[in-house]
Image 1 (tube, rainbow, N blue to C red):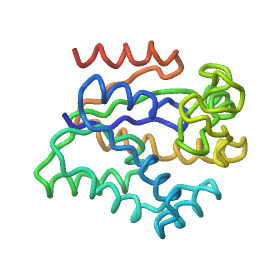
Image 2: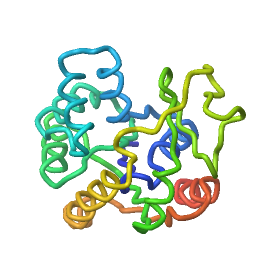
Image 3: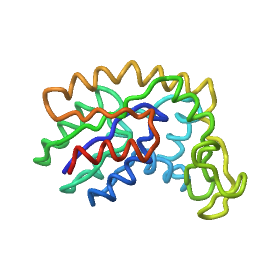
Image 4: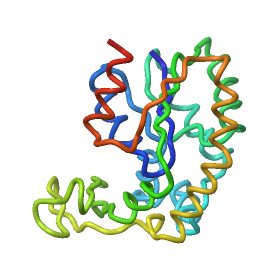
Length: 209
């Protein structure tokens, strides 16, 4: 199975990608994880990525497409965080075709702007291992400390109100184009992402039983 999990920042893509990939026993390919690892290493790619992130804008299509192409040469995968615009979707189709592959599903986590703002403003990330927490829905056991590695929890620079609004605007402009592009190509599984994460997962899981 080859699928995309698609939704706005704060829709829960990362959380659902982890549990869904484990349930389906397929590899999760997270663009965000790959890029953050490069930033952590301080590589040339990481420096480019950091510059984009701190400005609240998306990493260039050319850069992320190059990264993704190196990671989808396998039989089954779940793509998280890519494609983010029509150009990337078109590039992905060409890359898959070149490797004699085809997508099966697009799982669309549908959510409203107000819920996104509430979620992201309360999100905290471990400075060391990158684990995600939420001050209301999934708080750490000890305030400001990661449950997994005891690292400091911080607010990402792209989770501030101004940047959240900008990211939402970018997503809104591109999402309709992507859904239109895929509507006659693969099955689109639409899920209400405003629910609790367990309810969201059960709603997705029902479609693959």
